[in-house]
Image (tube, rainbow, N blue to C red; front, side, top):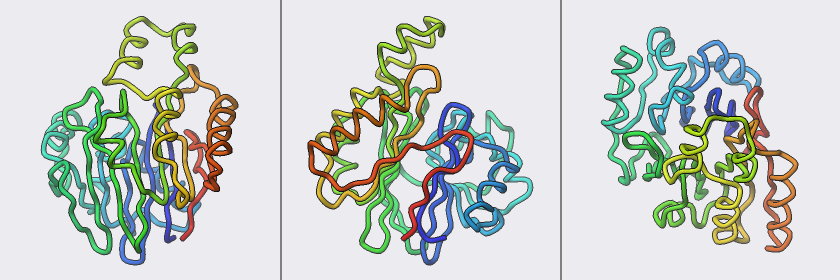
Length: 257
């Protein structure tokens, strides 16, 4: 499949398939080897055909499948050095790491990949901008606020995968612990609907084709609310971009190029 497809999105696990003419990669592997294989099969891809896995950061919902993958498959794992060390310390496994430097673009097959820093409570978390066939794809979740670097990195995209984790009043009203609320609402936590809306208001442009809203909290957000506020923004912007939601327990809308 040439294009991309979110395979899982949320606190229980995250992974995205991205395919070009020459490369088949995953962004994160936060669900089991079995689940990855099953969901890849739904889009006509086999896990043994995956050429590489890009890792955004070391939280378990982004690396859960790596231990079994490293034992069963010979797939290189692209990450920065701090994240690689943490994966080794947490999983006690040494995959075939390929180390990149955050904020330095690198090439892999027919892809140009820029890992950019995001504010989150891990060692060196990143989002990715991938360039292929004159198209720009942005993948950005797990961040507490929109830094100037994040906003600049996500400008002029053709396709955007962006976190809108929670609605702030729902977090305060939830039965979650005070520690959880502090973390999620902090500048190293997760992105609110309000902050995501501000970002989109600044970066939506006429050539933006599709937006996936991702990493949606099941308890502290509402899919109906998200669709209402973001579709309203796109209408006001006279944008033709399609907006869909990324799912936790099943694959999401495929982007076929």
